[in-house]
Amino acid sequence: MHIPELSTKIIELGEILRQNKYMLGTAESCTGGLISMLLTDVSGSSSWFKGTIVSYANEVKENMLHVPHETLLKHGAVSEQTALAMVRGVQDVLQLETAISVTGIAGPSGGTKEKPVGTVWIGFAIGSQHFAQHHVFSGDRADVRYQTAMAAITTLLHELRR
Image 1 (cartoon, helix red, strand yellow):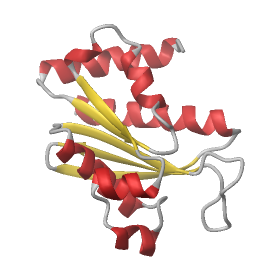
Image 2: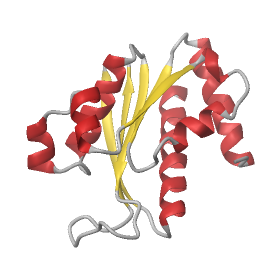
Image 3: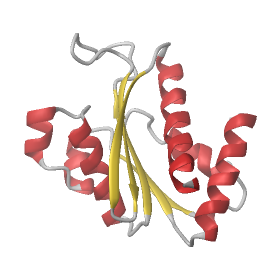
Image 4: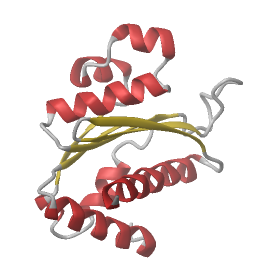
């Protein structure tokens, strides 16, 4: 999948990561590995991208990323709390300076009134700084997944430029 606008951002992201000697990793649920695929489409990404954990099932979120069971029960898989726990988990498990997590409802099913299809939480870790963003994307499943990946990469790039 070659998307010129996104490829340019990924190349710049890689340069910033490499200059800072940071390794990046991802914890992906609703994108199913799309972000890591886009990152590894760039030649030389092995010098700044370490890997991903595709945590589509809650048991993977709990067992591999150490998302507390109580967090999933109280807030759900698609929540700020889960996105933050996922990003901290992948940062710890893969020994990373920077990380991205995504959890959401890509559709076409699975949405509710409170969390409609397109609802996504993206978590970010840069060193000891952790934060999450809420989005409600539109379109079909592919659109939601692509918009999620674009927002995750663009936001991390923006934060690292500061």
